[in-house]
Every structure is written in C-alpha cells, then in structure tokens.
Amino acid sequence: MRCLPVPPDGPIPPPEPPLALRVPLAAPERPATRSVGVLRAPSGAPPPSLVSPGAARDPYPVFRVLRESFPLVRDELLGAWLVSRYGDVCGALAQDGLVAVPPGRTLAHMEGGTHRAHRALVEPALRGRAVAALAAGASRTAYVLARRVAARREADLVPEFCQWLPTAAVTAALGLPYEDTARVQQWCRGGLTHLGGHHHELDACLRPHLARRRVRPGSDLLSVLCTAEVDGRPLSDEAVSGLVGSLLGGGGEATALAFASFLANLVDDPHQLALVRERPELIPAAWAESLRRDPPAPVVLRRAVRPVTVAGATLPAGTVVACLVGAAGRDPDRFAHPDRYDVLRADPGRLAFGAGRHACPGAELAARTAEYGLRALLDALPGLRWAPGFRPAPRGLLTRGPRTLLVRPQ
Image (cartoon, rainbow, N blue to C red; front, top):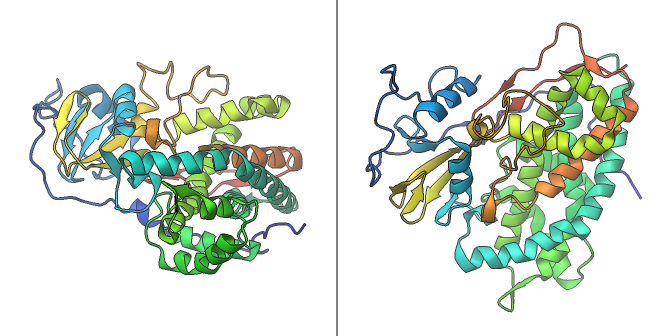
C-alpha cells in the first residue's frame, strides 16, 4: 500500500490567512426582549468589542471582562450578541434554532428532521470504517513526516507537520486519491473550513468520484455517504459534497490549528511533555485539555432562524450570536486554575468541537489524528524542544493557533 503524500523538501511558503479570519459584520438589530448587556461594569467602563485593536492578537483579556461583567451583550461593531459563560455557551451551541453562518450545506446548517436524519447517517460511519481508514492513513503519514523532521537541525512543525497530517488523514478516510491531498490543503489555505460551503473546485473534483461510488461503492466513508438514504431516498450529490467539504475543511484548518496549539502546550512545559512521553495513554486527555485552553475556534458564530432563548434572554429571528468558546473554556466557575494547561485535569469539557446536537461529528477523527501524530513525533524526536529564542505566538479570533513552531528535533 502506498503511503499518503508528504510535503516536498525545502522551504514551504506560509499559508494565506483563511477567509474565516475575516470577521463578518452584520447590520444592527433590534434589542432582545429582555434588556441585557446594556449596563456598564462597576468601573463604569463600556463593554469591550471583539474587533477592538489587539483582540485578534490576544482575545483572552477581552473574554475575561465579558465573562465577568457582560455575560450577554450586543457587540455593535461585530454585529452580534456575545455569550461568554460556560453554561450559557453550552446552551447556545446546543440550542434548537441556532445554525452556523454563513449559509452552507453541513450538519451545522441543518435543522429539525433533516438534521436528525443526516446525522444518523454520518455519525455511525465516522465511528466505524472511517476511523479505521483514518487511523491507517494518519499513522503511516505521521511517521513519514516525523522522520523527515528528525533529519533536520531545525524545523517548523506547522507547515511541515501540523498542516499536512490532518488533510492527508481525512483524504484517506474518504477514499480519495492521495494525489488530491495537496489540492485539498491548498483549498483549506484559501478558505475551505469546517463549515464547508459551496466550493466549486471541490465540487468539480468530487463529481466523478461520487458517480463511481454510486455504481460501485467500496468500504470508505465517501461510499458510505453515497449509498446512504434519508426517508428511502439517497443523499443528493450536493448534500454529500457539503458533508465532505465540512470534513475536509475541519480536518484541514481546525485540526491543524488545534494540533499546533496541542504541540505548543506540551513543548512549552517539559515536565508535562515528559509525562505524556512516559505515559502515552494520557494523550487523549492531553488533547482534550489543549482544546479547552486553546480551542481552534474561540469564537463560533450562529444565526437564529427563529426566536431563541440565550443566557435567559429571548433574541429575535435573524440575530447573530457569537458563542465565545475561548471564554467558556477558561471560566473559573467551571474550571480550577483555568489558564493553566494540565494534562491530568479530571474533566476538561468538550466545547471546542461544538456541543449537543450540533457537536462536530468529526471530533473523533481529529482526536485520532492528533494521537497518531503525537506518537510519531515522540518516537522520532527524543530531544524535542524549542529552537533557541523561539516562543509560540498564537493569533486569530474566529480561528486561532500558532502559525510557526520552530523546534530542535534532537
């Protein structure tokens, strides 16, 4: 069996900022039924905005002020209501009537019976044959990439490992030709995210594969989707393409950023890195804790398709709600010492990939990819540490993570 493709030798150009980093503004809305978020903090200061200068560099001071003094507030510059406390964010992410923005074709955009029917098809597939296909692809590719990094005096793990591995793993699970991995990675750099959307190049790439799978299905995830039925009828090509786009975008952008933050948290703390190296069974917990502390999507936007109740207030249809997952993950009422990264934390929560009915069905694939990736790096790089003078610097608001991880492999 041929190994999945790996990035070429030599310097790799930095990726273009994904489109999701551009904050979509919305027109001002009518206030909520209950007057909320309009009072000033005890100091008299007005609520901060997520688009204020410096927020993309480090949003956590803003998150703290919002969580403590403005748990539900209208951000006029962003054009959205902000919800920041753990329990309220959990409720909003699981809320009926709140769907992803911008409009798209993924599970996060679906409601009611359509959502339930599609999810019932996708979830078992992602837990079964797809996981096996992904595990094999991720493990093979991770060790090839890790050995290449090990041969260097100094390496940047983001372009040479983090960005490549998740895309290759999901491509393998779908059963797409391994030659397509480079194209998918380029699309992710250009804006293909976990929200899928109408990506014309991806649709054109998938069209012949969908036709073949409908006639002669195999054991891969794409075949599962092509042969699935909702109310006795097969999923349309558009529906399958939307779900595939969501998996590829999430595997490409969200998982790559999450994996970069995961490595940054571990390499930043040699004691915890040594603990995970000594006890690899802690890797799933270490991954979950990194998602809590540094989620790849600290701000998740939702749109109300009908009146909804968020944090005790009724918001009208058409309202955009910004679920501050990054603020919720560091809520001291839910987590002790929330700013600390602790691989032994008993319950780090599960907000980074959604909650309730809109939880990302690909979360298990992301976790498996991260585990195989870290195992490969730990085996190949016994002396893994930062390059002299380097410190990771995460950035971004809607999507966030370090864009550079300079390490000395040995």
